[in-house]
Image (cartoon, rainbow, N blue to C red; front, side, top):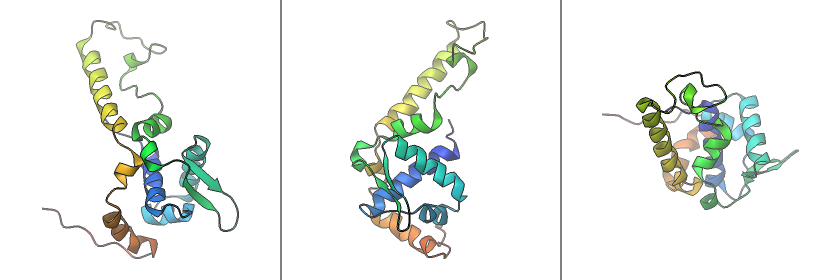
Length: 156
């Protein structure tokens, strides 16, 4: 399974808002921390605002913040919003299915089971969970917020 970068950065935007709560976050803060194009984040914030996950404030001094408690925002719900149906294969969608094996295919059943397991994990995760190591996350992004490259972690 692979999520789009759109979903990834929607979750990162929510995570940053949780880390900075109750302060407003600017789109430019997300852009700077994650090195993204501003229009991409504007679109994400707009969608998350329309869905009730973010409260947005326009104008000078504007920005966004969580519109709900981070414990109430389920990662799986956000992924469903940003990804739409997770049709891994054609036969998952009866409107476009042309597979003659529908209903008897063990591969299709296995992929459906795997997709359900994937979403079950995300449904058990909230924005509060992905922001729970607040100190570590803030320390890692602090240099990025100031325009300085963050030190790389050593991997072994």
